[in-house]
Length: 123
Image (cartoon, rainbow, N blue to C red; front, top):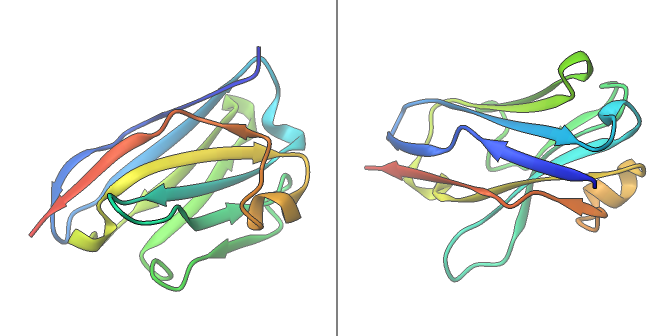
């Protein structure tokens, strides 16, 4: 069974850092593009960052550009999201998602989703 599991969320003060992990089981991430998405209470889900299967392409939402870094370690079957200089407005449930199509991931319609991890940034 294909599964994505996020971890690394938690409570952090404004200006702090967290590193989220997205571990895959049941399939190899080598051939999949990965995206990180988030959803805050009362708001629509939004894309945060995306990485192609070969790490040749990475993209970020304007709101996190310069603060977040996406990376992948295919040997560990894991994708990471390093989040620095966190702000209260970054508070949300963060999801990772995978698809063989980078376009689908960037477009917000990947096939496989994790269950999410909560990130709370206090002011």
